[in-house]
Length: 213
Image (cartoon, rainbow, N blue to C red; front, top):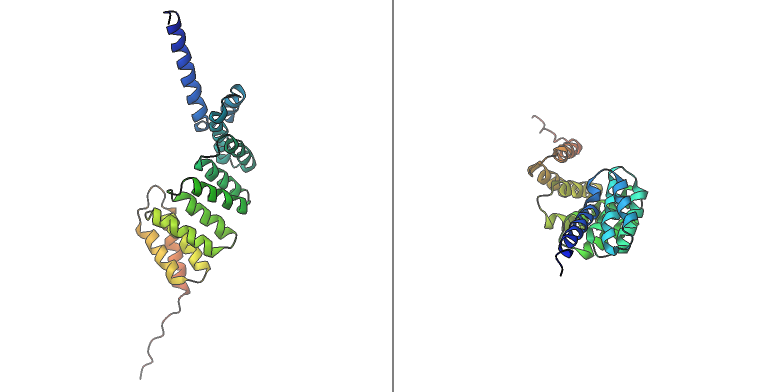
């Protein structure tokens, strides 16, 4: 190798590194044009461009543009069909767009690719509950709670499903568990659990006092 070739290789290495960094992280910015520029500038990089489509899809999700997000996640999955997070993100976009059955299919795919995470089980439970399939929703919540017992929101959502199915005691147990878990950065889950417990208490019949003789 000649001495002249060494600086050239260093420059190429830096450019490749910057390009890869930009592709993988373009969704961290709030400007979809960055991801679009990466996609347009790098048409032959194969599955690497899936990151740019994913990034643009995540930006669309943050802005509530569900259809744009679905389209970009479609492209990302076409290029890289083995990443669980892509199916999970598309499932969220589909659920928000009202495409519940398709969302459930995507959650199934996400779980098939990585069954160790609690989040897709929890989110699939939400989609199933929205379709009225409370039995399967509770089964999905059960797995989420088993994988991550500290997830207060999953306990709360399972409690809501139990309550809708008329299982007040099971619902109360979940609401109490959600209330007992650490609040973390968001106290709304605990507030909701407290409100549900108050709702259950108000629905219970008031015990009658024994008549005086």
